[in-house]
Image (cartoon, rainbow, N blue to C red):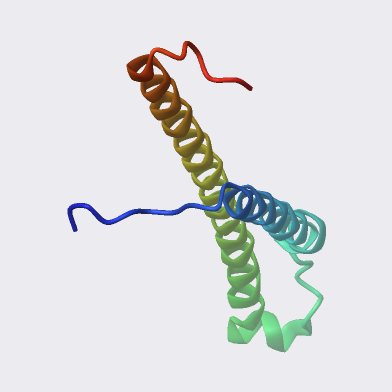
Length: 113
């Protein structure tokens, strides 16, 4: 849409970036703190029946997969937070460039802080 104004709340982008990074840390902490120690479970945990039926191997595999998926999710959340922070910086730079151009065109010199 040509001629439409776009308004961006820089503080909202900053807050979103911060929350996404915090969530990434929380998810990673769950993977590291809660699941990492259970990636390999003792063969006697579910007894002979668990070993013979394959439940033991299936459980160990699922815990390992969940651990890996949580790390991937944390990476994605961290990347999302970084993208929001970059977008904020880009919008801020664009605003500063536009203000500087306007001031130059008006012959006012550089804009204030």
